[in-house]
Image (cartoon, rainbow, N blue to C red):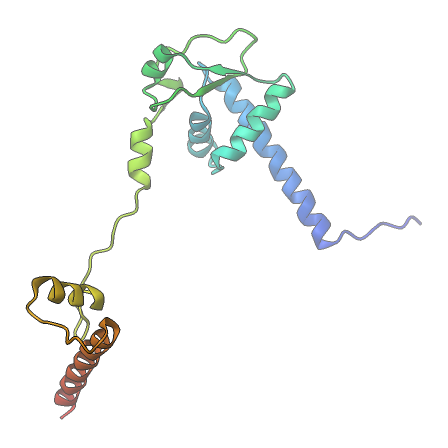
Length: 191
């Protein structure tokens, strides 16, 4: 009888992480090989997401591509201005990666993968901007923050702060007055 070592949960998690890393590495290198032209890291990221269903961060993909280049599986160079215009790229020149042979062809169109068109940086940035939530007025809630009310009153000089009071004391008095009015509204509703 041979004794088998029990695998701990930590060792199992480590083995799973290595397995996923190898699958991602293979997918990245396969994506380079399936490209018809040299591609940027962002295009590899789009390909993995759309064709393989793998969402990976661009830094992770870049590290895989750099490691593949050091092993001789991929090649890279900085794109020219003509290639940048053909790709419809960003404001600065990108690094192009290629795995189809030692001689990198010139980039001539936006479409490096069948059915995937390179997105300009302006489209990606505008899609990532967060939308601001609309403010709604709820009963008993003020739409304008307290400090904005005080600043408005002070700037318009429709209400003067007594010289003996500090601004903080004045703000507290305004807040107390608002709370008292809310309390009286609640009392009216209950009676």
